Image 1: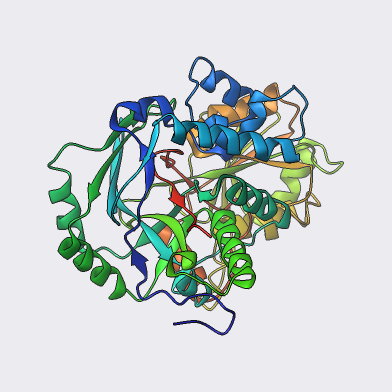
Image 2: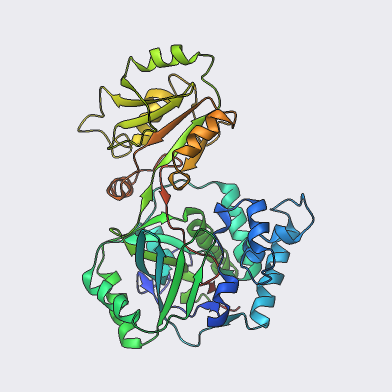
Length: 423
C-alpha cells in the first residue's frame, strides 16, 4: 500500500527488522558513545587503540588530517570505508530473519529496559510517533549524508511509549537468556541486547505497539527527520518502493523508566549590568534568597542562580496562569521570558553566542566552574523537565524550546544498525 507521496505505508507502528550488529565477542570492541555527545578530542581518545570502535564510523574525521571539515565529502567516504571493513571482517554481522531486540541500560543508580524496532515513517509523519523539537537543516543534512554513505541507519532514535505491563513481561522473559551484546561505554553505562526472533512473539509485540495511540520521540529528532528524507528520496528514485523504506531505527522505553536530568544555562555577560544591578532587576519578578550551597531547584518554577561568587534561590512571584499553553508552563520558557530575554537581551537561545548549556550529568559544580574559570558571568540551575510536559507539548502540536531535556543514560552507537533495503 502506498501513500500519496510515494512512500510505502507500513502495516505496523513498530516492526521487527534484520539488524546489523556486532558479533557477540566483538560488542565491547564496537560500542561507543553517541557521536553528538563527544567532542572531537574525546572521540579520538576513546577510539585510540580500538580499531573497531564505532567512532571510526560516527566521527570518521578522527581518522583524517587534523582540521578536516567534519562535513567534507571525504569524512562520509571514510565512514563508509570503516563501516564496510567492519562488515567484511565479520565484526558486524546481519541477522537472517526480522527480530525485535531488547535493550537494557544499567548504571550505578538506574536501569531501563526497552525494545529496538523499525519505527514507521508513515506513522511519524502522521504524528503517531510524535516529536516536540524543531530541527536544524545543517544537522539534518549531515545525518542524511551519513545514512546514504554507509547505507544504513546507525544512530537509533530514543523514544518513549506508554507503560504496558504485558509488553514489559515479554521483554523481561527475553532477558533470561544470554545477550547477543554486552558492553560498557566510557560513561560507565552497561548496554546489553537480547534478540527476539520467534514469529509469534514478534506478532504479539507488534500488536502491543499497534494498540498504543502514540509513542514519543525523546532524543533523536535530527535522526528521524534525516531517515524520512532518505526514504522520500529513495521512493522518488525508484518504482520498486519497499516496505522497509518506510522505517527508521527506534529504541523505545516505557515512559516511567526514562530519566530526564536538568539542562542548565550559562551566560557570558550580564548585558552591561553589574551583579547588584542584575539582582535588583530580578527582584521585580522573583523572590531571591542568598544560600551557602549550590541550588538544585526542588520543584518547577524555582531556579538556582550563581553570580559574583554567590548562590541564590529564585522563586517566581507570578507563575504561569492555569490556562497557559504547555510550552508557556515550561521552566525553560519561564526563564527565557522573565530573565534571559527581557533582562539579559538573549532573544534566541538557539543562535545567540552569549548563552551555552550544561547537561545535569555534569553536576552543579560545573556551573560554578564555568563562572569562576570559564569566562561566563552567571549560571542558572533548573528543575528537570518532566516527561508529562513533553507529552503535553507534543499532543498539543507545539514545539519545545531548545535544550529543554537531557536524557541519561544515552544509547550506545554501533550495537544495532538498520541497513537500507538493497536497490
